[in-house]
Image (cartoon, rainbow, N blue to C red; front, side, top):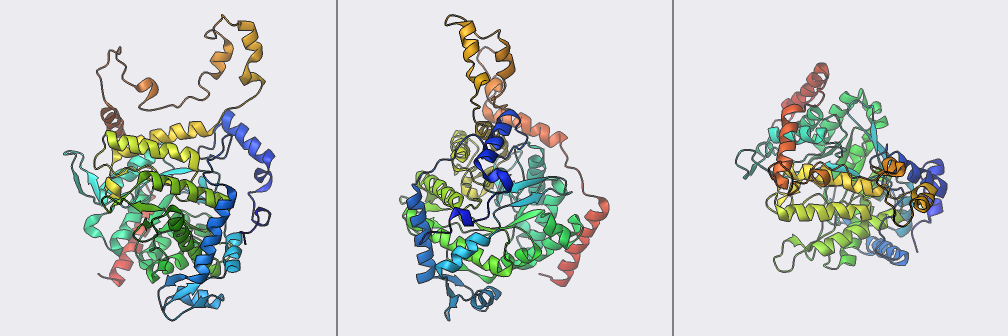
Amino acid sequence: MSPAPRSSRRPAEGAEATGAGRRRRAAAAVSEPADPGLHDAATAPYQPLPTAQVEQLVEATLTLMRDSGVAFEPGSEALTILRASGCAVDEEGAVRFEPDHVRDTLGSVAKSVKLWNRDGSRAIDLDSHHTWFIPGMTCIKVYDRESGQPRDSNAEDLATVTRVADALPNIDAVCVACKNVARSDLHGEIEEFAILANNTTKPLEYLCETPESLRVVIDMAAAIRGGRQELADKPYFLQIITPLPLNYHAIHTDQLIAAVRAGVPVSIGTLPIGGASTPITTAGSIVNSLATDFAAMVLAQQVRRGAFCIGSSDVCFMEPATGGIGNLAQTSLADLIMCQIRRHLDLPSFTGAAGYSSSSRFDADAVAEITAGLLQTFFSRPATIDYCGSLDQGLTYSLHGLLLCNDLAGLVRTMWQGVQIDDNTLALDLARRVGPRGNYLAQQHTVDHCREHLWNSRYFGPNLPLSGSPQPYADLHERIERDLQKILTTHRAEPLDADLASRLTQIRQRFELAHPL
């Protein structure tokens, strides 16, 4: 059996779900790109698989969930909820899901949510029609500004990355880009949220290891928003949860339950390694990843039907020669397929394998990999790109990498605007007047359209150091460094209200006194 037909799933609002609505969005995006995250305009995403094979992967996922099941921690509240919903649960906590039950979940899950900035004045739409660029996530080292060498990251580093991200126009939200390694405990996780809130006005992504720290962060976000209901009405952060493949511990499901009950949107997914924690084949690893995602979405719908809880597993593969995470071609293709499957199910895809590099330094290798990954987003259309600026296989954060990602995001967004085809752009009347031996340099048509599809790059295009320029040559790293130094010197995020900042500190201190380590 195939998943629920598109006609039975909740469409986008009003005419925007129709062909006419899409055409209006396309025209608006070309002439007036007021919605920078919009990718569903004049260009179509790449579909690597025929529809029949997409449905085959979904069917295989439902079969795996029914026949093998997904493990949940015995004694957890999640098992109680799933058992009450009619799922079969064995003595060891393995849950088997009936395909019709899963299909019903895929039909009832919220397909979009607005994520609001700190003061609730602007929002980004998390859905299948937008892509947002975000720095992250959870690196444990940074490159020291003086020596250039990797060192353990700290609270000041997280504040710096957050402040730089606040200044960048194509960075849309902020995540925990690097950890305060010296305080890697639940109190440190709570402090990380406070650092984000104090150093940017943009919406947030947050992730933690314990439900206890998440509950305190929900209290802090509610204080910022003005109350629990106000937070549910205008969510301030997206909670990211990272379980193991097909295996949910209580610390993960308790986070899901707490977030869903509070009206906080959730992205939950595993990071499988094909050949180690999932099958080595692309199809096999995708099926295991989707089963992990769907199980969380079923649980969330039992907690609150209509909740925004989207599975977001990133499929990676073992490099056979070394045993490490590698195999760029297989990982990139799997990412394209996962995005296609989620589009097929009318779900936003938080699978954004881009913005990072395996290189241990911000060098030519890193630039090549970051560029290739960011350009792939033009074809894959994920809802978020969450790894902007992460190097060294996710261990070390690079501010230079973040600034490059911001610039390349502008390139991708320019491409998403597509090309408008009409009498004016075809310019046949103009071509007849100019004739085959004329030129267009002095034509008003050229003046009117010359900047229509330009990528306003900070480092490339007109900013490239040309050989005939009187300015001294500066390579890409030097050009980014000048820009970075200016941001660090001049930009400060709008501060939190002093009374509100004091309330957040009191919430943290009360928890620390009640829960000493």
